[in-house]
Amino acid sequence: MNSIFLNSYTIVYLFSEVITLLLAFILLGVDLKLFLKWDFNSSSKEQFNLERLAYLASVLALFLLIAKFIIAIYFIYTIDSLALYIPGAMCAAGVISANSYGILILETKAVTLFLLTLWVALQKYDIEAKNYPIFKQKSALLIIISILIIVETILDFSYFSHIDTTTPVSCCSTLYGNLEGQNPLPFNLSISNMLILFVSTFTALLLSILLDKKITSILLVALFGFISYYVVVYFFGTYIYELPTHKCPYCMMQKEYYYIGYLIWGSLFLTISFTTIWAIMGLWLKVNVIKLKKYAIINLAIFIIINFAYVAIYYIKNGVFL
Amino acid sequence: MKKILSILLTLAILVAIAVVAVSILKKDTTITIVKGNIAKKPLPIKLNKTNDTECAMLIKTKRNAVEAIAPDGRTWFFDDPGCMVKWLVNKPFKDKVTLWVHTLDTNRWIDAKKAFYGVKDHTAMHYGFGAREKESNETISFKEMQLRMLRGENLTNPKYRKKLLGI
Image (cartoon, rainbow over the protein chains, first blue to last red):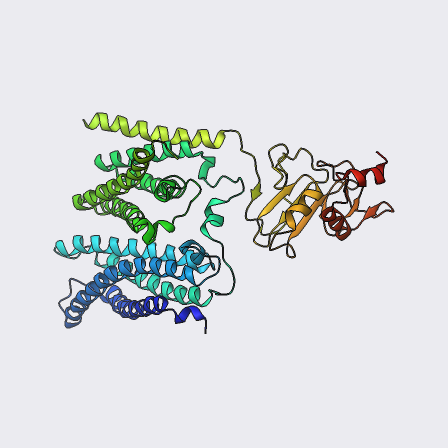
């Protein structure tokens, strides 16, 4: 057996994932039944039973949303802790790149969490309406989510079983820092141009949300998310680490940096999710969910304030920029 | 108020588009490494825009240029076979590396490990090992060239140069 399975962090993580897997199987079965047989106009006993099942499905989905958020955070914490056992790894960057499943798990987790958040927003709209107008679409969404959770658990086991504790992996300096002259930034951007692009995209995104321009918001939030990743790794990250050569998206989630990475990446993820869900609901259901809009703006503000605060504090303390 | 915000939104979007456009259109920065060459084929070298990884000189001609490709597809460029030997000696993947060299006689990319090397040629860094596809009395094998380079038996060594060229 791969020795990584004997690690307590891995055991706890995989045990939690197996529990969500079991719930996902139940959810899949229930939602397939609901999707195929739901008829709100019917007053049969079967429909009555389906309505009770629908309640079960919504409770399961809500539980999964909370559990998956906690497990996603714990996953990062786990892989960060595993850096001690894998030669060459200094943080989660090396561990996640130990094989090709690592990044896939992170992407699957992000998509699952986004869809679960979307489901909560749709659920609220649906139960407030009189006749469950989007029940079938909601059920279809839960079927997709259940399948994603099953895929995620398969990826989890593939990932941990393919980590070799004897083969050295690259550390974050090799993966993100020492690129031998290659420009890692997209569109051939320089750092200064990237900052201008970041600030202009942020301004445009904020204004488009305030002006209720939904399609523009979706396009801008996609660009903002993409650019933000590079800005945090290659600019703000250097101020968090107070070291111009240290470029890593994971180290900032360590104790030494007060776990600030969780807040930075979390607020970015929530900005993208809330903005997209708000825009989707506006375009599809023609409703303007003010709460989602507020949450999007709050998270955007948290993301911007934290990042720029690091630059400002560094400048106040040292009198120079990096 | 809404009008002002709309104008500001348009301006911000235009700035973002302009920054991306300017960055894409601006003159290329020099290339040192290319990732993702999984096919491990020789890549076209952008002359005067590609740096030799070892000596950091710009590669000005394909003659004797070398490309080293790691098992994961990372590709490095060299202006002289001697530079490649110096660079490769400490690399963990030195036994699994794919090497291409551009020959003097047939003017094409061939497997650098199967090429033959002159010892008195004019090369970019003056080591003297010019690559050829065809063997002759004046050429040595790749292994021999590697050994001589690491021993310092090349034209940059004054003693060795005098012995070979008489100057």
